[in-house]
Image (cartoon, rainbow, N blue to C red; front, side, top):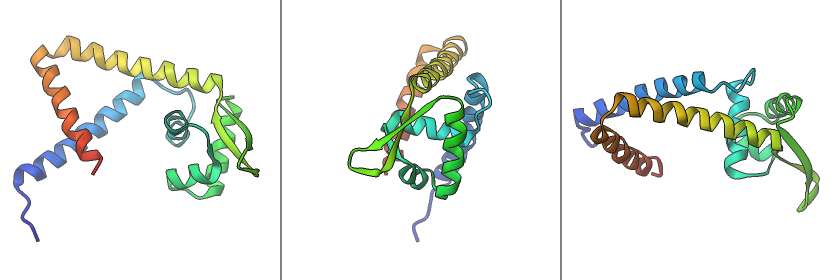
Length: 145
């Protein structure tokens, strides 16, 4: 077994803790109203990957199809998704963001990014912001492994 340097263990702990705190803070900044984290995750996934079937969404979110059906029903009540027949298989439906869903995602994204840009401006030097940019490039590379 390879020895893991203490600095790697400390970095892993710090990244996990900071990202968890930052994720919670970003959720506070731009609430999705009364949507649950599971529902917002599905909306974000649809925004990122485009139309998907319920079974594809269930697999991607690692939940049972019955749970995904309930999640989608709740999202649909808010008018944030639409359904249409899958052209490749008329027995299935493709779920996609409605115009209201796209707008909800865009507004919350702008709110979160605006808050973060403001605190980076107010609380950090230019050198610190450059360090954040460089660190994000490293973390992005690691996320692809």
